Each structure stands twice: as C-alpha cells, then as structure tokens.
Image 1 (cartoon, helix red, strand yellow):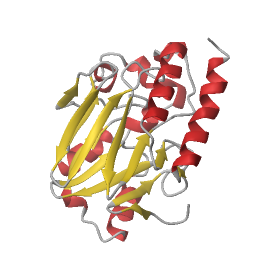
Image 2 (tube, rainbow, N blue to C red; image 1 turned 180 degrees about the vertical axis):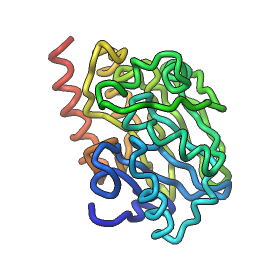
Image 3 (spheres, rainbow, N blue to C red; image 1 turned 45 degrees about the horizontal axis):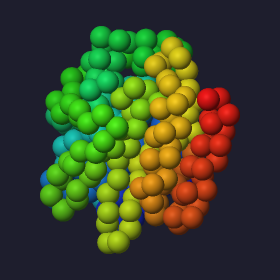
Image 4 (spheres, helix red, strand yellow; image 1 turned 30 degrees about the vertical axis):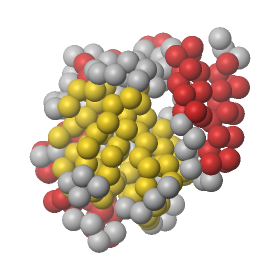
Length: 232
C-alpha cells in the first residue's frame, strides 16, 4: 500500500503494509461520533508517520479517544504506551491478554523475539466474555468484540455493521501459533469457524490486507481452517 485510505464509510487503514514501519501489524481507525477508535497500535517504531497518515485523511489525531487491542503480541501493542501518553486514549483488551499488556507476563508479548523493549500500558476496559460477544458503544458505531482464543488466550475480533455491510477486524487469521505465547490449535480452529459464521462482507486482516466481498472473506478463512485442522 502506498497511501492510507478509507475502506468503508468512516473506516480507514492507517498503518502497516508499507504505510508505517516494517514491524507493524495493519492498523485501522474508525471515525465515530465519540471520537476516533484505533484497532491496534503496531510495533511503535513509526508513531510520527502513523499520526501523519491520520492527518492526511483529514482526521484530527486529537480526536483519538480509544484503542482496541486485538491481542497482546508486540507488533500490535508496542505503540500503545506512546499513543496513550500523547492522546490519553482509553484501552480495551480481553482479560486473558491483559497481564501481558500490563507487563506481568512479558514473555507472551514476543518482545524478545522481535528484539525490542516493551513499555507496559494500563488497560481501562477489560473485556470478559469467554468465547462470546460484548457490545462497545461508540455513538453512531456499535462495535462488537468477539473472544476468539487460539492465537493468544485473549485474542478478540471486532465487527461492525455499517449500511448493510459487515466489516470484520480479524487480526492474524493466518496465525502463527506458538506454545510459548499461549497459542492453542483447537481453540484457534474453533475461533476461525466462528469467524466464518459471522459472515463478514469485508475482512480487515492483521498483516495480509483487506478482503472483500463476502465470498472472498469466507474462502480466505476456510483456507486456514484446513491448514490448522491438520495439526489437531
């Protein structure tokens, strides 16, 4: 990707995929009536460029109010502390990944694997549903958090329905799975099947781009169901 862009009606891609540092996951932002909501923070080595990408979309970084962390790996959370300091963001994450995000279980972040330091950050909104859903109210946008363990114990996916289109933020559908980071193959396959059942029209993946329409989303996820089912 050469430039950040609007994916669908107030939903934008702003980081990763060549838009920011090579170590970043794909980073998304949603423009809601309660402010800008980030989906993940990236590795954190290219925050200035991330902010400039937001500005380039005629969005004001000072409107950033919340960040939803999909899981505790360093390429998704490394930038959280700096962004929180700059914009006083409130952070949402699942209870099973909170100990890693807040610094109690640093090994789960994979920071050592990446050869970087991680600055822990406080999670204000701890999501508690176990293999279920929780609704997050952001005014004109209702975001639904789905607990999808497997990649990590507290992995979540987010979906929102906008003008009859379901946008699914399913970071790291592709895995990988590592025992040292708390991965579980059986849970992961179950979670992938759960994602298929959500019938997303647009899939915003964690590293490998954006998929649409619904048939392509389904095909993409099914490929990983087949791949990881062989490991059961």
